[in-house]
Length: 140
Image (cartoon, rainbow, N blue to C red; front, side, top):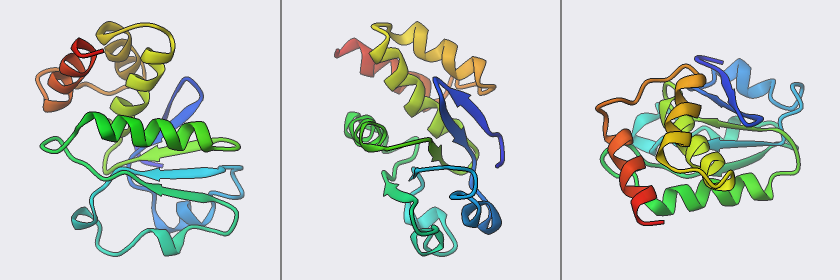
């Protein structure tokens, strides 16, 4: 998948192709979490998900990101019974969500989230995502 990386065992990636979606079960993926709003997709993604793979949609973008999105992704990760892919268009939103959750679980804050994002190969410096991360941890 485009820009595929792992953060604490969770796969983060950009938009999977139709062939990649069809192959999720073969890869052993239990759950796919889509962070893209419907307006970003040419056609609905859910019907393309193979049987046996859970599908969760938690749509947001840089302008709409909020704590409830973190909660929605956390719930999906907690409910998963196996490997999870969290995706968006290019992978950055996915990395932000998973890094925030991993950093919370480790008792870390902004620095832990930013480190995980960077280690996964993404750069959020100066973006709305970096500002959100700072606000998010300031209220925790």
